[in-house]
Image (cartoon, rainbow, N blue to C red; front, side):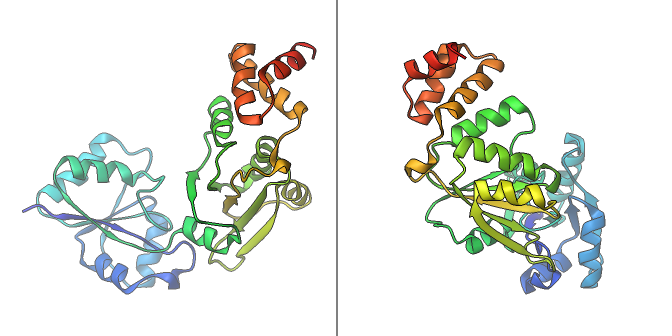
Length: 276
């Protein structure tokens, strides 16, 4: 009889946020897959749970995944956790969930804290709809293309960001979305130095020019609500055209793409671009 694969949430910072059911399942499974065993062992030690830990992360191979699946097929119950929050979302564990589905293995969820939902709850921004973007692409072209697609997004947008990249990301946000767009910057949620800053993108860029970012960040960005203040200047639109051209787009195609998102006419952008 096949075992069961349990997707088990863990605290996002404060270890007291563990649930009774999470503790129960961590005690009951035969082994636990962890993104970083050094992080997970601290949680298990805190609650005196002694289980075999199997490392499974972004660099794990298909063979590593298959070994885990084979153990479940042979009757063992497996729990998967991530370093913080819910596993299998922007997380290597999604590979195992997919393989379980392919092998007709039962997958059950043991829900817990989520940095995404927690950040939205304290953002002070309207959350009737939201889109989770996770970490933006590292590749410059892919990153610019992603931000371009999001320029007209009307739903609340949620991003993860590391401290050493925050300043650059806020600067890019300001360029793509306008300096008046509202943002809530959530730092170190549930931890000792938890902080939520609610401001405009322009204010955020200025603030972090004077304060060095520390800790892990969740960025909650207001969607495009049609406010004219969100419209970028013609100079900013031309800069977007230039970036697309630098990435290999034809000037006419670049002007067409930026015109669609910015509200400026294609001919207006093309004329300004050619006269630069």
